[in-house]
Image 1 (cartoon, rainbow over the protein chains, first blue to last red):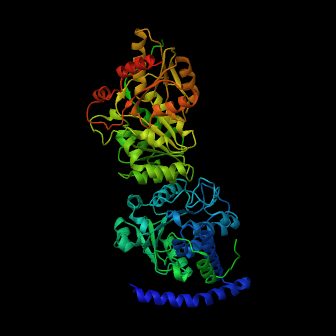
Image 2 (cartoon, chains in turn orange, blue; image 1 turned 135 degrees about the vertical axis):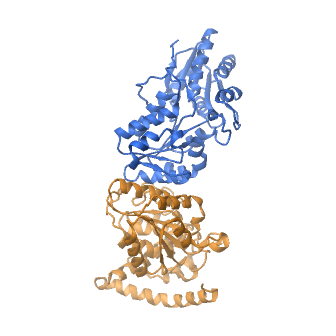
Image 3 (cartoon, rainbow over the protein chains, first blue to last red; image 1 turned 180 degrees about the horizontal axis):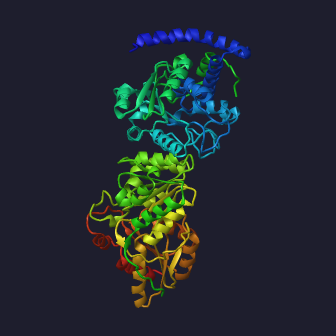
Length: 315
Length: 317
């Protein structure tokens, strides 16, 4: 366990190194032909962080903490991990599917969807505005490409994904179904109905990732409602569990998800425990629940953006 | 008066089960999910004939609704089956977000609705489900009156693209609508033409309304009987036309008068043709244990109650 002092020390070192790191990335962007695949992904992560911060700042609402913590995961998923078609179709036949169960981290979802080509990046400007397709929480209701299910009221994503995964089997479609859930979200009982069903019925074309950042609105998950041994619980229900200890490290995520994919088709659903840092990439937002659902003010935005210099171009 | 004959009492849930069996043979996209009530919902044949398309989810209704929503992705038409109480109140938020708001083509099929569930008592006798479901934007709400109509409705909703709540019951009741009927969602069915009072009924109360109309006829009162099987979207045109003719109306349903068919009719009339109305329904109360007939009598949900309400509303004209 990290002590508070250690966490502060890590945060301090990170905040000193971050501008250098990002400057290097910016230079790499300028020599994009020479960039490795991983460097391109890292450049995208930084741009996604900027998108997240600018979306929530503009409307002074939204959820930056969890969004920042999952930026690397979303970039890895949409750029490398999933086998997906460029053109969006609701049915998603012959491609991998993704469901976001903790819908409040919509800023990262929207940014990565836009930057993966599902809708114009400029539309991020409309986040949470009246008449926008980018509702506070994701919805199919406004017809935003890339969204297959409304989420926001927590605990429903795994059930939906199981349904979609079972239909993939019925349709002889060998593609996979991915879900992301928050860790606090596991306090909702429906998850455990779904977790029991998936193991009992060998839904082995399903990979559920848990964003294990240890934070929820009212504080740390350990203070709000201790969930004990999450890995042990999934295993006791009959799931195959893998850990990605460095859940904000692209290479670790890519490697971990490769392992997860390799484990599919063996009679068990797969759970990935993704150990992330809430607010990752912005020093003053890290390791706290304070930025779960709060937008930065003008000064804070400037500070946060300066830690993440533009890579691919702001919208 | 038209004469209606009970061709042999049957439970409406068997109409659902037989409709589902037929759909299994005719529509390969139909899948069925059940929360540990296969026998009660009469889903045995579908399960036996199409085990690969049948999903036993156990006593986990929230997961069942979520799974059904997910199954629409990839082109399936999921039919969920459990008691009405567990189909609605228990899973309201799952239906609201994953089905209704997400616009998914899920058919929520609910048996043992209302007080005629009988001896199990109030925990299982939901009298609020029509209200819960009709308030959801985009949800179609159907309450069928007999075996034949329930079977026809089950077939019809498979061809309709959108979320549907199909409500039916447990006891054997008169089977009197045509076996070969075409079920039109949202279309009122005129069972009797009349001039003195309009009786608009849904579900098990439709047969009671026909019996009431006979009694009223013996007293020289001409009652128009309309079967509203689709509470949402409501056939407002039929209701307004009849109210304009008879100038008074009785609504009859096995449901709380708060949130039921009666309130939907009252809204339509208040906007278009203000008309004296009496409500045959439960009056903001829970049910209790008893036989269906005893409960219908105690809670004022039978032909006698409809006759009394008709006489009262005629006097208010």
